[in-house]
Length: 254
Image (tube, rainbow, N blue to C red):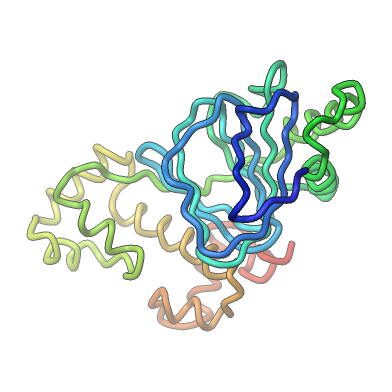
């Protein structure tokens, strides 16, 4: 059985197979912080996920997959109905995606391989997996990586503000200074020290990830531009293309 829902009791680490695949459709969901003994490839052909790691957050739109190495503590959140596929790999395949978390381009062939393997029965003989697995490994290791990560500062003065970003926009540096009662210089030092980025660069990355999340949920360019407080639709499109090399429409429908 590979098709599961929210009521299914499932732990990939308790199943003995080189590959355990699942396919699921869920609504609002929060996996909570957890880890696996197996490497995991997570892919959502519909909807959008946010994945939180130690001090880092990333967004997973429909055209990308996340490789999560074994023993990596992480949390996956879904805020809408999401079709997702997950492959758990063990044995010689545990580290095929590398030792670091990465966001990877999903080619048409890789997508079809993920789809097929996600529906494999959990007791499928290993020798029947071999040829498909070899092709999957080749495609995965050649997949183009993407920088859809946002490092999170750990300074206690910023934690309540970071939580508020679930529903609010990231403000300018001067406005943030007023919100947390710290000088602009202090905030700048915190961000450079704890994220490796000046606050303005961090804010731009936050806006990019939030834009990708909104677009993946089906919002129009006009709606996203308005929600992220761009001066116009064209200003938002120019920002998005500068960051990704594509217009919002091209990015979501590639």
